[in-house]
Image (cartoon, rainbow, N blue to C red):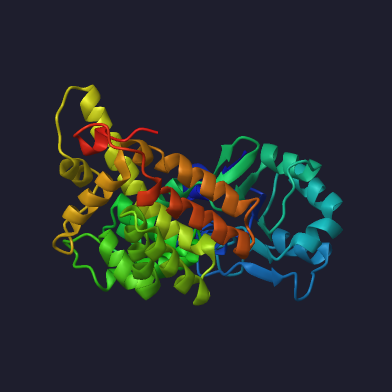
Length: 375
């Protein structure tokens, strides 16, 4: 059958019906539970009152003989239908019974469904390859994309899930920018994101959207507000104030990597507005900085904020604002690699703020604020 990511499976579970054996691997427990619910519906039927047989292998590992007997025994309450046996925490069970599981996968007919819930599932084993060919295995991890030889979590895909899940399960409309901020605040932890969406739903009328400002207020609390104030100071060129605010946040126990989600979300707005401005120039279209900021979702809330954002972008100038995407990528790689330790991570953020300071600004050469900076 196939190996499929859990988000793809949940998008169309009817297209991936498990037969014989199904493996759920990875550490994303919230999505794993959603996938298990869909598998149970397909294996036992939506109206079946017959529960699956569940063994917690970390508490007590069952014998293979007992598992095989349960799979071959017809349901007493499901109209003679097949049985579903779920083995939770089955990593050690798989190691002990690998040969028997391989034989089970190779069988042409199965009377029941064996579901293995494991954390590790190496792709270079015969068992992995056999299940990939003959059955269904579902990767229950945050979505990723390749960056060179490494894999990075795809926060855009997580944000897209937030928007979709918020609408379908919590009846809350959360646009892309607010969803990205939520992911930056809470991280790619789907269980936490689900709880945050439930909290947001209490504050948003059904005919309104959950704005980024509301996400900041409800989910982020004072630390997020302080982080936004920090970014405002940095973008205004006041590096001394930004560094002082960074110190207060770090002294409160925040890790630099945890702060970076809010910082990067805020700074991307200026980079996006600069790109919009430059694209309009290339088309021969004359727009204002204010209009460029509005097009990327910057709102005049509280009153006067749009004017302040315009002043910050003017302070940064075309060249530096155009480098923000690259600066953020470099900072992200450093925080996850060479500067992952808290002390060294602090230096990376301080360097980012100093790049935006008034003292580091290149000289003005023309009248247009976004066209006046040179490297």
